[in-house]
Image 1 (cartoon, one colour):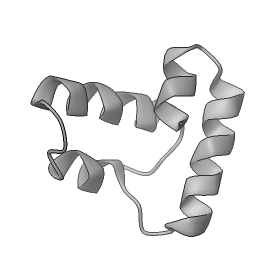
Image 2 (image 1 turned 180 degrees about the vertical axis):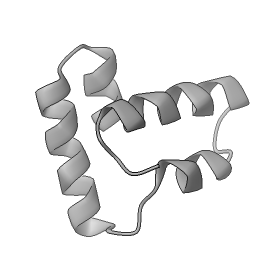
Image 3 (image 1 turned 90 degrees about the horizontal axis):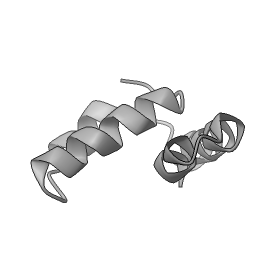
Image 4 (image 1 turned 135 degrees about the vertical axis):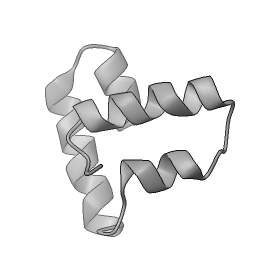
Length: 58
């Protein structure tokens, strides 16, 4: 949800979603997520970039 809000240009909602994610998964990192290779590499990179813009830890 955080990445979607970033891509829609709604940074306030993206940051709110990021805060909620960190409440339920305090150890979440963007690099850990990207390493999971859930999707094509180009998509994971784009998601990672968006998540960083949302304020999630690298």
